[in-house]
Length: 86
Image 1 (cartoon, one colour):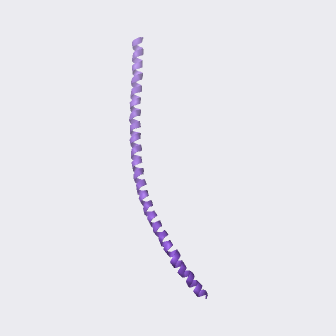
Image 2 (spheres, helix red, strand yellow):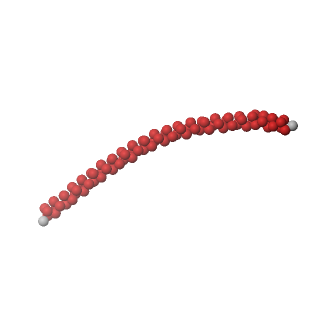
Image 3 (cartoon, helix red, strand yellow):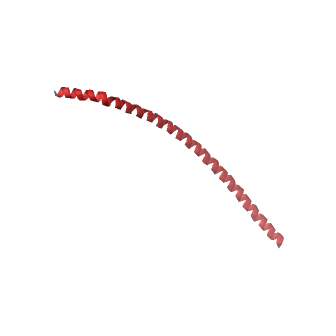
């Protein structure tokens, strides 16, 4: 009798649980594929962002140099004006 119950439970597991496990396994495999795709996209975006940051830093550096030159010229003009007024 115990063997009959064991076989009935075994068949029920195979009929009910096994297909569900296969379905879950397929979903997990699909999700892994999606995650790998997202990782690739993120790596690409990270590279683009690094490039954009480098470009902005370069622009800021160029503006800093121009401001330094402008301030230096202003100081020179003020000094020349002071000499001319005296």
